[in-house]
Every structure is written in structure tokens, then in C-alpha cells.
Image (cartoon, rainbow, N blue to C red; front, side, top):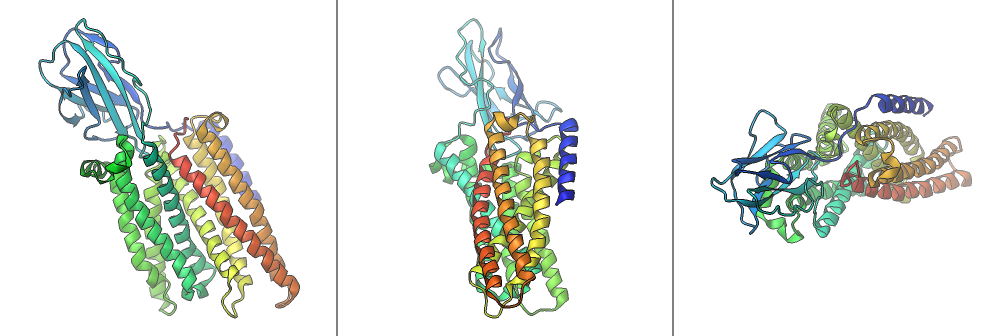
Length: 440
């Protein structure tokens, strides 16, 4: 643990001095015509230049006149070689007057950004462009709350599936435990359901529509066109494969070669699931995306192994199987948890320092305060975990039977239960972080 802290301090210093922080969400860098421009003749097209390449998103730019009538013609397209520039053509022969440009983009980290700007042709008055060139999401409150809740449940599903590592590495005898299997199946079911829910909610979330728009086929098609929708489909396929692999992974009697094959397939499929989370969050806004995405994969994977193992350990401590000695199981998990904790700490520091615009973001923005809250939660987890490790050490060094050993296991059971509850809170904070811009 001391080596991990030394490495953490080195990484923090290096990143503070050399890192180029990621931006929050996509922003409009410039537009043609500019906001408030007065033109002598109507332009042939309206274009915007963004801070990142979001691809061509249908319907993301609309132009209306004072009566609210749409005056753009044709789909959104890239007018030149600049991938960050998008445009829409206008109808020919537009009369003098004011025109309002409405834009709505989904950034690389899956969050919507929308706003307006206005221009006038001729000598007429300029329409007020409330929220001009802004980053307001305008998301419906119910849809926003539902999306955050679904993200939390998705994280919970991943964590429950992370308990498979506990069964493979620490408690092979648990493969036949129906309760352990039920936890893994619950995790897979949660992940399957939340992936579908995320897909249908993304359209209303990005378009600022209400919960009733989840069945709008146009919005579903819009979600499918962007990278986020495709990654959700990949996650759906990966979870379906996991559901097929889990019974084979947990089969108690099978040749070692076949068991190793299922373990490898499960590990690769689990990696794909984690990648679909990391590739759709804040890490993809980092100019050096490989660093942040890798750190996020390590961070989320280590949390899944750690907390998923805690849930499995708590289950077998609460109601042990007959004649099962849990002391060696707890001792193995203690070593696994120590490595996971070090990975969580180091990768979390890399993520925070790469994603946040500046160190002052920690205490001046909602995102930073959530990061501090998550750090506090992890610190509390570490404090309780140290109690668990002490109980394990006492149990290992004591006789096979005795009141002292029983007391140590009872303390371990209490500590693990507290860790699981704290983990639920930390996962909730993590879900809030994914929907909060790093810069605000």
C-alpha cells in the first residue's frame, strides 16, 4: 500500500504539471453567420464549428423565421474538410427579417448540449436569441432523474457480475451455491434491463422531450445513428453472451482446459462490457483519450471486483454453507481487495486530474464536490476494510475452534455489511458524476 501511495503522489505531480485537461461537453466555438449578425442578403447555408467531432447528427441544426416556420432545406452535412464543422442549407430567396438558429448536439460523452443564436437579413429588428451559444441541456426533469437512476442500476449490475472473480479466485466451492449464482444472474438481468432502458431514454434525454417520448421511433433511430447508440447495442450483445457463459463458468465438474476457456471468454466479454461504459463517458473528451479511457477501465473494473467480491463474501458470511471454512476464503479475498484498492486509488487520481479543467474545480464546481464526496466515501470504505483485514488476520492465527475466532468472524461480518452499504452510496455518487459536466 505504501508503494501505491508513492506512485499516486508521483502521478499526481506529473499530471498537474503536464496534463492537458479535457473539456466538459461539446461547445459551439463559432458560427456563420455569427450571433447578432446583420446581413444584406440571405446566406445559402448556416454553419457551426464545434469543440469536438460529434459526427453528422440528423436534425441537430434548425433555422426558423419569426413565425416559427422552418426555413432550412436538406439534411445536416459537413461543408468542408473540418470534421468539427456542421451546416444546413437554407431555402433560396428568403425575405428580409430575423432568423433563429436552434442547435442540439449529443457530445461524445453522451450528454446533450443545445442553444440558439440569431441573425437578421436587411434592416429589420433582431429577434432575441435567449440562451445564445449556450451549453444548457434543457433536459426534462423526469427523464434526467430516470437516466441517472438507470445509470446507478447499471453500475450495480456490473458490480454484482464482478463477484464472478470472487468465485473463481477466492471461493471455487461457491460455484454450487445457489445464492451466489442468484447474485450473478441478478447482475446480468439488471445490466440487460438497464441497457435497454438507457437506449430508449437517450432520445428524449438528448432532445429535451418528456418521458412519453420513449416510444418515438424517430428518436430511437436518432440514438441508433450516433456512436453512443451503437455502443449500447454492443453492450446488449456482450451481456447476452455473458448470460450464456455464466452457467458454463459455474459448472462444478468440468475439465481444467474447458474451465480455463470459459474463464477467458468471460473475462474478455466482461472487458467489452466495461469498455462500453468507459467509451461513452467523460474520459472520451480527453485529448489523450487512451490515457483516460484506460484509467476508467481499470477504475471501474477494480471497483467491480472489489465491491462484487464484498457482496459475495457478505453473503457466505451471513449464512455459511455447512462444514465450509470461510477463513481461507476471507484471507484470499483480503489480498485481492488490497490490489483492487490500489488500482482504484491510482486510476481515480489519473481520471480526476485528466478530466477536470483545473485543480480548483475540486472546490468550485458541483462536479468537483461530487469527486470529493466520492473520495470521502472511498476513504470510509478503506477505514472499514482495514477492520475487515484485522479480523481476517486474527482468524487465521487462531485455533480452528474457539469463542475468539467466532468473535472475529462476527466482527468481519459486521465490517463487510458496512462496506457493502458504503459501496452503494459511492456507486450513487459515481452515477451523478456521469451526468455532471466536469467544468460545472
